[in-house]
Image (cartoon, rainbow, N blue to C red; front, side):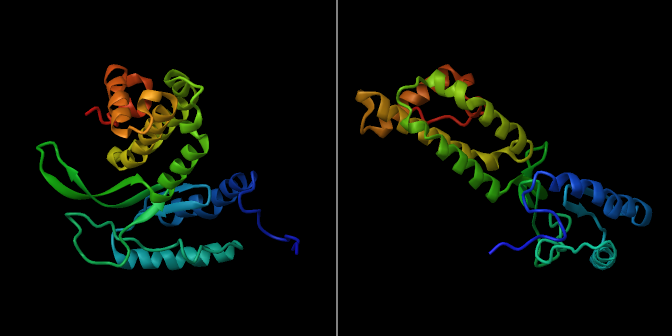
Length: 234
């Protein structure tokens, strides 16, 4: 049964982000600049974050924004809109929410190392689980392991631009969180090698060693090899 839409924009519609940007520029951005200049904020389309110094300040801002949005015919998402405590070594209190997703990154307490080599806990972004899953699903759809008619150089030309795009975006912060997803590409390339070469058929360790040797000689062949995520060569 189809229900005719009388308000709002379609989820996933091409025009939706454009309209969200136009409308929220005045509903949220300009309003925050005039009324809450002490609270830094960032917004992309209909997703946004605002920084507060205390829990009470955050609760007051949330309440005020709820009123503001309703006055403009909008509603804050009941599940996504929440107060998050940016816990780290300097902020050690206990709160139920200590992470959030924004622009396909998950912000949460993470182990980091300072210039002197000492480890500490900082509140940092890294590729989200949802984004990592989307990358793996996309890579599986390539069916790289079945392209035994292609050379390794052919596969590089076909898929390196996309892989490089993932690394350039998701590797901007806490790059190591991306490694496990990129290693999946190596496992797929090993399967490709086992299928393409008779001498490697049924010999995963030999295929890993063979591919690892190539990665050592030609690290620029694939973008993730260049950043150090290579197959095991022994």
